[in-house]
Amino acid sequence: NKVRRLKRMKDMKKSKFIVLLLLFCLQPGFLAAQRAEAIRKDVLNPCLDKVLVVAHRGNWSIAPENSVAAIDSAIQMKVDIVEIDIRKTKDGQLVLMHDDTIDRTTNGTGKVKDKTLAEIKQLRLKDKDGRLTEHTVPTLEEALLAAKGQIMVNLDKAYNIFDDVYAILEKTGTADLVIMKGGHPVETVKREFGSYLDKVIYMPVVKIDDEKSVKVIEDYMEQLHPVAFELCYRNPSSTVPVRMERRLAGKSLIWYNTLWASLAGGHDDEFAKKDPDASYGYLINTLGARILQTDAPAYMLDYLRNKGWHD
Image (cartoon, rainbow, N blue to C red; front, side, top):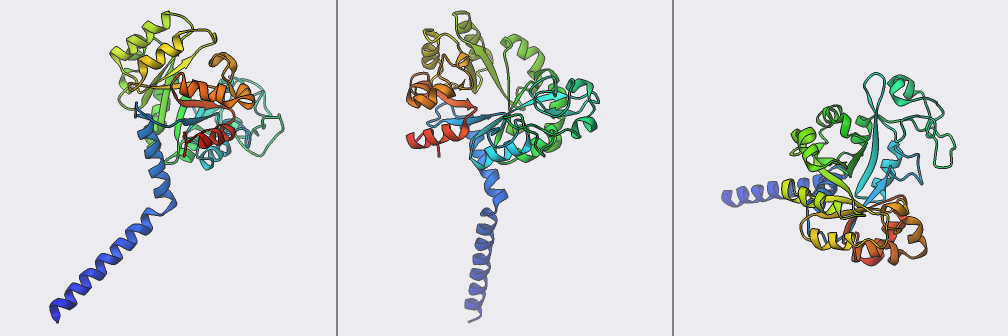
């Protein structure tokens, strides 16, 4: 009887442990962290069989570009990566801002580099139609904490100030969230950015309208073998994009931008509204794109989900 009682007690403790573990795993924070980890694994998978969506400056159809609200909206939509732009203030703080001035996106005027963080924090952001909102300019730290565990982040305009950026990544524990990019030759990147190449994902940006670009990509493949390339081309008749699909298939992911026609041979968001198969579908099926950056994340997600390319 005593042995049976002890066994029952052990079984009850084991059952309670399993229940507590399940409850923990169902917590929103745990699930969010699991999703972020899954996105990172996808980015690192050269044989990815789905398409990752990048929201350019966040989902600015809902909230001002480069705002925490735009990042939050992208997360809620289940976008995979959010692209944000970094600028440095007069007092050395890092904030989110695409332009070098605050004129277009806030109710202020002047250059970011001539303003202190305190001055910038007094401003209000404008929405896509130029109307003033209650949203303020976030710091890089605030943006990373909003994204942490839930989405990956592509940092633009950060290459030349990456020493400052990396200090924030360390402070917030978000280095594994970050994708950096740049348009420099591989030798320059190794010399200037080499100490960070094993700490964050680095993605070369290569314009592939002419034959010179082939050597740029070959140099990168030989020396760094990036997990992905951002490819840009203006000329729809260029043969290089199709050749790059064959060259990089199963080796590195291909990222295309559908923001403007000049970035993807005319296969942009505007064209996609008329014929998504000829725009998004062409980039995916013919040019091998597995990462697409868009200004229309909701529309793109609907298309990809209907085609079985996104969860």
